[in-house]
Structures are given as C-alpha cells and as structure tokens.
Image 1 (cartoon, rainbow over the protein chains, first blue to last red):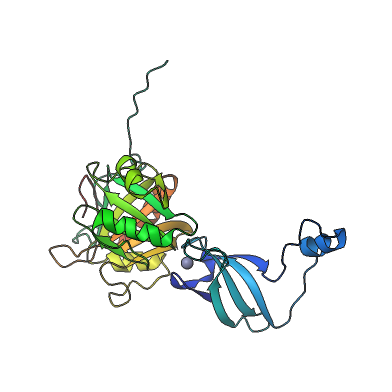
Image 2: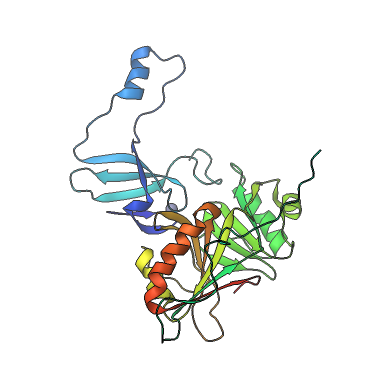
Length: 91
Length: 209
Ligand SMILES: [Zn+2]
C-alpha cells in the first residue's frame, strides 16, 4: 500500500503510522458520561469507505486525513489534518 | 562554579575510517564524505504565521524559503524544506546562527539549533544512486529527483532529510543526507554494507560538497 502525502508525494506504507477513525469529535466539557464513553471507547467497524488519521512520521511529520476503503484498500483522498502547517489555522 | 570545556565531536568519530573499503581492484564506485562543523537551524512557522515567516525569510536570505520539497542555495546558505511551513538553514562559519536568525525570524517562527544534533553525509560516485536505491524507497532517477530536490523520508527505518546538491565537476550527482546524530553510525554502517560491492572511498571534510 502507498499513500500520496499532499506534502511529500507518493510514499510507502512503512513511513506512516495509523491512528484510527477520524470521525469522532471530542465532546464538550459539559457532555454526559455516555457521550464521553462513546468518544473514547466505541468505534464503528466500517466495511467500506472510512475516514482515517495517518501520521507521516517517517517523512514530513504531518498528520493526514485519508479516505480509504477498508474492503479494497483503495485510497480516494488524502488531505492535511486540521491545523497542519502554520498557514491553515484550524482548517 | 565548575568550568566546562565543550569539545564538539562527530557522531561518526568511531564509525568512520578513512580510506578505500569493500571491493578491491576497481575504482571505488561510491564516495562517502562526512561534512563536519556546520551550522544547522530548524525554522518552523508559528501557528497562523506562515505568510509572515515567508516574508521575513525572504528579507533575510534574499530568496523565498522553500514551501515545497526543494533545497534552495543562497549566497552563503542552503535552505532545505523539511515539512509544511518548516525548513533548515544550513551554513558554515557562523553566518546564520541562532543568535542572528532569532533576531530576523523569531517574530513569526520558532527556531531550534540542530548543529550538533545531526550528521551530514554526502554520497557521490558512479554507483551512488545504485547504492542508495537499495536502501531508499523514493525514486532517485534524475528525472524524478533533479538537482535541488529535497525529501523528508526514511532509510533503513531512520528518518533522513535527503537532497540533491549540485553535480560534482566530473558530472557525478551528489546526494546529501542529514540524519539524527544518534542514528548516524547505524545508517553509516548500513550504507557501507550497501556500498561494499562497488568499492567505497571514505573521507571527512570541513567543506560542503
Ligand atoms: Zn509527508
């Protein structure tokens, strides 16, 4: 498997580290225990297209958001994660 | 208070043995040169200050700092891309040190002195590309990696900053590698093993290739 880093270009899988699902959003400080439990522990076991965080630690050290099909490993999109670099404030 | 006398030593002081190694009876196909005593400053734009950093860098160096994987030569420094909104300033003779660069760039960027934290290795010779191709997964073909191209990549599971310098007078390509000091000896031995079949000429120098 190869990932096309938006900064470095196409690189082998060994340069990247997988974090996991990019969908969960940290709940507000006032959120219920159930909501926090869901955010921390509960994950969907997606069969198909999934949005994931990958880290290009063996390259430019940027966090990336990768859209990957878990059935075929086909990658349809790679974009910088929010806050990568200094120009994209929270983008 | 105790007086300290810091003596800077190359991380390759033990591993590097000058001379020709590996295959005998042929002209060495790989030239490995460690470059010692350089000034290396990592510059990273602060959050939201990428545009300001770019203009401050241009004012300081007279050219735009790289915002894509390239190494740019100024009159007295190399600016080497290392990631989004970050680059290295590589120079010699205290022309660009923490002291002078902090004054020029610290409004918009964070700086970190890496002068003694990395080893700098130049790889050249007729078999340089063949040797590196055993270890690197990036495309080293001259069309894919023309002069001035930089890459943040991994060689033998070790992070390196690689860039192609100007060709030597004999036309041979020069690949420069910056590697963390503590990984330098490991990478050095890996490259020696990969280069042995071609014959390898080992040197160290105070001058950039
Ligand atoms: Zn990258």
